Amino acid sequence: MKKTLLETYALAVCFASMICISISSGVILYDVVEINYPEVTIESYMLDMSFPPPPPMMMHNSGSETASAVNVDALPPEVLNPAPPTVWGGKLFTDQVVTELSEQEISDRKQKRIEKVLKNEQNDAKRSLIRVFIILLVSCVVFLIHWRLAKRCSEG
Image (cartoon, rainbow, N blue to C red; front, side, top):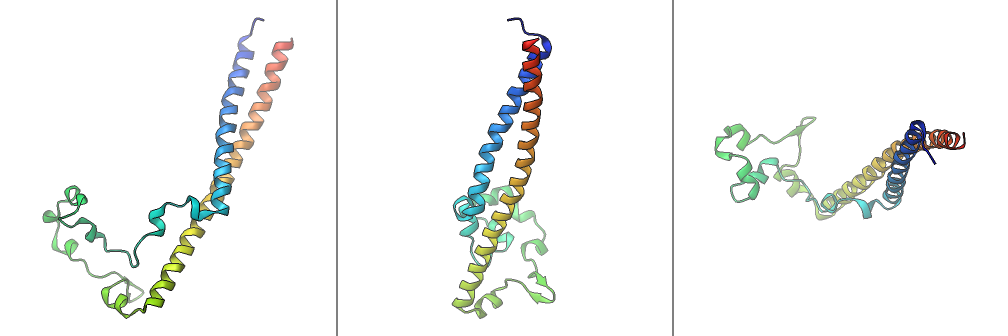
């Protein structure tokens, strides 16, 4: 049962293709679950985010662990006290806007944000599914070509 170099190569490629097929199959199963049940696969912090989101510099106050990563004292005053962001001439997430919203409006906005996050999760899974199907298709073709090559080498 002497193996030729060509047969060894073909079987090694078949082995590598089987690894790709196995991994692709697992990713496909996860993507199918993610498309059908995005609330199960989404990171919990995406659903638990506060509304409205805090300004970026609130995360770097002196009492937090992240403050050690940023030297707040060395930052210029315009960074420490930024002007409120504006969108098309209106203010975005200022205290003034939040206090004017009713509890029902805040709840509706939270629900819309959660629906958008879940829809984004589904869209990401669909894109991943397409990529993995391409990888699976290529791996199967490579496997079949090299399997036939290995069989031909072992027979003749």
